[in-house]
Structures are given as C-alpha cells and as structure tokens.
Length: 79
Image (cartoon, rainbow, N blue to C red; front, side):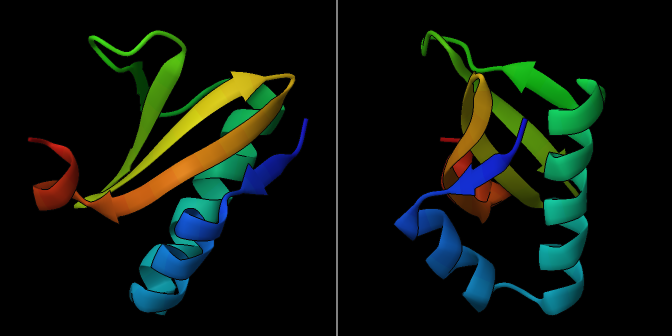
C-alpha cells in the first residue's frame, strides 16, 4: 500500500514544523505497511480513521491505499 496525500494535506504538511511533518509521514508509511500505530476510527464518520502524532492529527481513509484527507492541529480537529 502507498500513502496518497490530498492537496489540503500537502499544504498542511508544508506549514507545520518539519520535525513533526517527517514524523507524521513516517507513521503514515508504517501504518500503510504494517497496519500498526496509534490509529482509531472516527466516531460518526464511517470509513475514516485518525492517526495521532503529538498534537497533530491525520484524518485518512483506507481503500487499498491510504488516502490522507486532512492534517491539522488537535485544536482544529477535535471539535
């Protein structure tokens, strides 16, 4: 499986601190390869998952490949 970033997720990666961005991408790659990591399904949204890295969250869906829809700070996602 491979990780595919949406346009919104790509913009968010450019704006976040580089160390957090590289760590988040590494965790997404690890999830795509092994299915292991700090990932939980979103409540109320069928088929969407969230991956956590510190205060950052990646919202994605998995249909063969991992499609990352949104990357944002915790204060913006957890509402």
